[in-house]
Amino acid sequence: MKIMMFAHDGSLNRGCEAIVRSSTSLIKEKINGAQVYLASGKPETDEMISKLDGIYDGSASGIKKYSYEWLFSAVKVKLFNDETYALGKIHNNIVKHIHNMDVCLSIGGDNYCYGEQPGWYEINRRVKAQGKKLVLWGCSIGPEDMSDRKLQDLKQFDLILARESLTYLMLKSKGLKNVKLCADSAFTMEKEELELPEGWQVGNTVGLNFSPLVWKRNKESQTAVKDLINHILSTTDMTIALTPHVMEDGNNDYEILHNYYEQFKTNSRVLLLPNHLNAIQYKGFISRMRFFVGARTHATIAAYSNFVPTMVLGYSVKSKGISKDIFGEEKLVLSIDEISNSSKLKSKFDEMVREEKEIRRKLQKSIPNIKKMSYKAVEYLDKLIQ
Image 1 (spheres, rainbow, N blue to C red):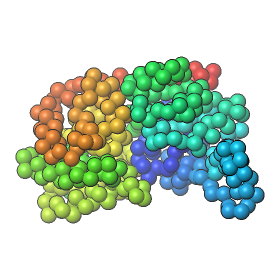
Image 2 (image 1 turned 180 degrees about the horizontal axis):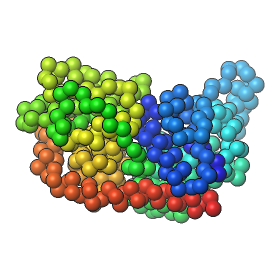
Image 3 (image 1 turned 30 degrees about the horizontal axis):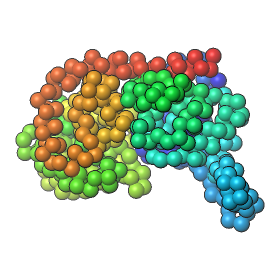
Image 4 (image 1 turned 90 degrees about the horizontal axis):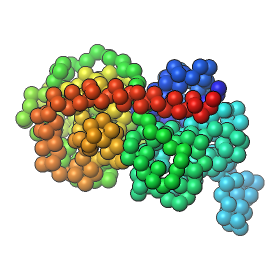
C-alpha cells in the first residue's frame, strides 16, 4: 500500500514536521506493509524524518512566459475561464506522482482556513480522476472559512478526518457524509530530551511561544506579551524559556522572541531556546516545563500531551476545538482580540497558576483518550483501503 502525503510546505514549521513524523509512525505501526511518501514544498527540510520511504520535491513551478504552456493556459483561462491546465502545470511536481500511489493524504491541517485553494482543488480533482483514494488528514476548518466552491471540493474526498469536534460538527452540518472525528496525530509524537540550558529551573520553568502570524493580526499584542513577561518575573520566581516553533522566512518565531530576549537578557531568569531544534527536541524541552504559554498550535499540543498546563494565545477554530475536546470547555484560550489586553493576559496566567493541580489532573485524565482518538484516524484510513 503506497501512500503519498501532500499539501506540506516543509518542516521549518515544526508543527508541520510533527504532523508528518507522527502520522508516518502511526500509519506504519497500524497498517501492515504501508509505504509512506511525502511531497514537500521544501524537501531539504524534511530529510531528518527517517521513517519516510521517500521525499519528493512537491514545490510549485512557474510557467515560462510565452512558452507553449503559457499561451495554452492563457487561452483556456481567457476564453473558457478554465484554469485546470495551468494549475496542473504549476503543481506537476505533485501531480506526476499520483499514478504510482494508492492513497493521497492532504495533510495541511489548516490549509482550508486561508481562503480559496484552487491549486489543492485541482490536485484533488486529478487524484479522483485517476481512481485513487483521497483523504483530508487531521483538518481544522471554521464556518467562516467555508464557501460553495470549497464545499464542492470537500465532497470529492473519500474520507475527511477532523482533528477536533468543532470542525467535525460544522462539516456534518454542511451535509458532508464522509467526515470522521479523530485527534491530531502529534499528540502521539515521541520526544527527545536534550541537556537543559544553564538557568533552567527543573520543575519551575514556564515556556513562552509567540508568533509573527498572531502579532500581525493584533499589533498591540506584542506589548501585552512583554507586560506578561514582566508580570511573571515580578510575581513569581519562575524562569521563562522563550520557545520558537516556526522558522520560516517572514513567519519566524525566533526573530520576535529574540527581540524579547534582547530586552530581558540581563535577567538570568529569561532564556531563549535555539532555532535549529527539530519537533521532537522542542517537545523534549516543553515536556519538562511547569507551564506553557503559546501561539503555535503544535507547540501547545506538545505541552498538553505531557500534562503541562497551557494558555493559548490568539485562538483559531483548531485551538478552540482541541481545548474543548480536552477540558470540555475552551480552557485558557484567548481570542485574537483579547491578547492585546495586558490585564487579561496577566489574570489568565494567574488563573493557570492557581489551578495548576486541577488542570494537570484533567490533562492526565483526558490525554490518554485524546491519543486513542489520534489512532482512530489510522483505523478509519485502514478501513477505507481494505
